[in-house]
Image (tube, rainbow, N blue to C red):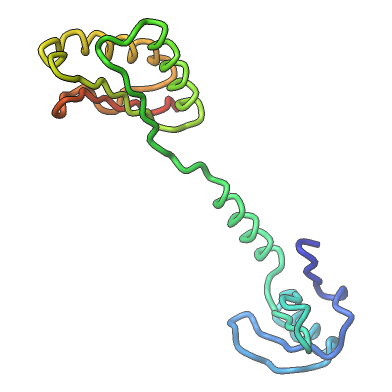
Length: 167
């Protein structure tokens, strides 16, 4: 019994307000008469609002109803993909890059996308090749867990690339 829903013979209170499969109101009737109406249509009588007076019951296919409820729950649990950002500079040390790569790896394993940014400040813009080296180092380290979705490109004072998790 999901969420205390009573079905067919489990409904003991009489009378009940009955709604048919199309959503039309059949009115208030004794429980045994409502059960007969449900059986005639080849469906089940399910108590949908037990706290009302009289309780509201609906004539529906209970198996199909449970299936749609379960499907709705699994749909809610789906992972929402986010874009996580990793920022490095051309002068960032090797160990610091390793730490950033480790975090990016965790993001990719959690099925999130990773935006890798190499930020240039002041005269660092004259050494784009150094920034490219850092970017390539990060992308090389993340090659087995992520695939390149957007190749590295310059956008103002930053070089960006996007990695998506491997399937």
